Length: 154
Image (spheres, rainbow, N blue to C red):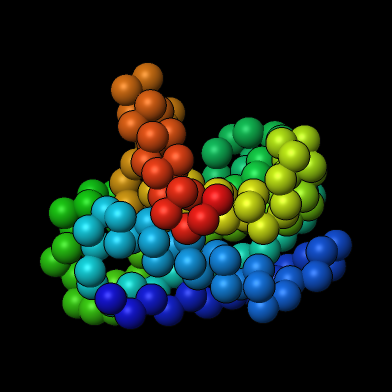
């Protein structure tokens, strides 16, 4: 699998270093590998702040509040992904670094740990998982997130 990640930084609160981009790429790659996904893919990752993610959350989810991460999958059905020519554009991930820093602080871990978790979480959404559909789906997603985070060393 070849993973191409297009990074965009639309915030100026937290410096986005090579290590930040590297951990996000590692999180996405390992999530895809965990799921047995072996096709070449493209993912767009945008780092933003609370104000901008609040606007996106309001526009696309009708929720007038900031959130930590938003996922915009290109496909509604995982089966549709498998028949696409490669590289497959899986979708877009938008992470509020401002929110990630605060959450990491409250959970007693680094912003890198939190951003890795958000990238894993969002990549699962790009692959069709949705923790808001049922309690069983939520439990499955939580289990997968924990296992993937252990694989990548968190």
